[in-house]
Image (cartoon, rainbow, N blue to C red):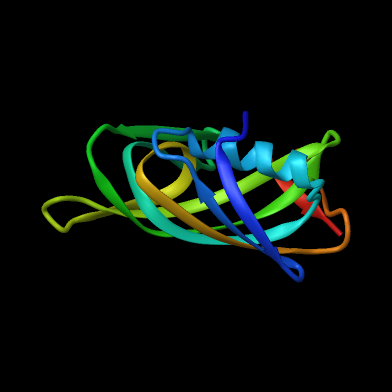
Length: 142
């Protein structure tokens, strides 16, 4: 069962992720279903749980922070590429809290709470991503 609804307009999709769905699995499911190998993502919405990451270059790994509270997803930006034959999502998000403070970073996961409205521009090519040994990050290979 799909965890989203969508409408295609040319090379763009308007995507609504279901309430209470986990955003990244739902978006990955959408990419698989629509056979999208590359694209650009932007969106807004609301969540009640989000896990953000910050890449620590000295440790060559992400430090993660879990936020379990209602927040506005003020901005979601990222891209779709391909790694190991599967869609690879690289997303950054900014969330507004009840006290109007803001948190943001690399989006590791989020659960939708109310709405998630995305606009996805597809790119008619496969853009590959592989591990870069120097940085420890999966980088785009052009």
